[in-house]
Length: 397
Picture (cartoon, rainbow, N blue to C red):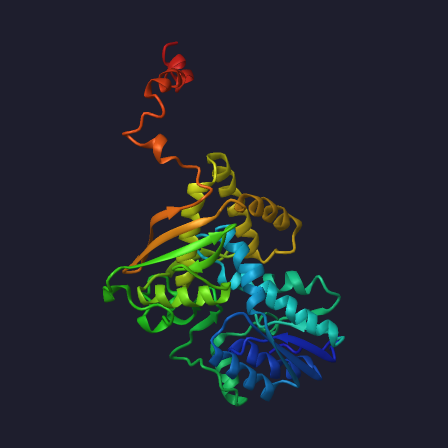
């Protein structure tokens, strides 16, 4: 294996998840890079409390210094809420891991700057997107960036064996080699047999969602939005964290929010990805439905392109790019009228809008009704005469 001791930094701050990759990075930084002090930073963006606890204990045992940062509220308010307003979705992926990485990277870099560390490190491979998302933030600092998984070209089976030899207890085995990333917005599962796009995912990989085939009776939930942000569930005002957590539980019981897809990574590789995101599915579906009620046709048409551009920037981790700020400026303005309540039906893995209302609706039941005389139907005749006029001229030439 390559030894990379040239220009060895004394102190390295590692973005730490508590999983296999970042755990083996700690001894690797000492053995292969000659690092004297490894500092770990675990950023809580809504992982299970048990995972946070195990990760903290593991880091305290392995690293020289460890920091645990609770960034859940910041994640929801400054990252998830803008995502909802932008209908954030990349090829059907709700961007849970992608949108969290810049925040984790920023918190890690802040610790490193405070400690005057010489380098920042992450546990991302050279095949995926996360290396780009972390380094878009890391390389904006003056610190060196170290990526052991990529630099040393490590295979997962080698990591598992290395962890065993070094007494690192991680919840990954050769029989169950799933790589799992989890925050309050989504849960991703990849690796092992899942890398075969023809392999049907076993039920054991799912944790947030019950099998849709259970056939529970339909359940109705109502979500209230103010300026594009969810503020109440079933009439009860709630903060963002509590609302998302509660909705994850409710929708997950109905099997809502499973995605099995082949995704185009930034590097050009196609990858099979599996996700769980019950609350995200419900909230994004409800938000899009409410926009149809309150935004004009031109706004909806233009915003669809803005949303797609926003989602691609978020997927790449480019949240500090000026273009990202420009997109948010339009989205925020358009969202100022996205107020109202959407009624959603949850049933057998689906989340369907079945009702919506808004004080800002661009909708007149009186004008559109078959039984109304507020508008005279005869007024439309002049419009109809000119509709398709140019095509008719061509046909008669």
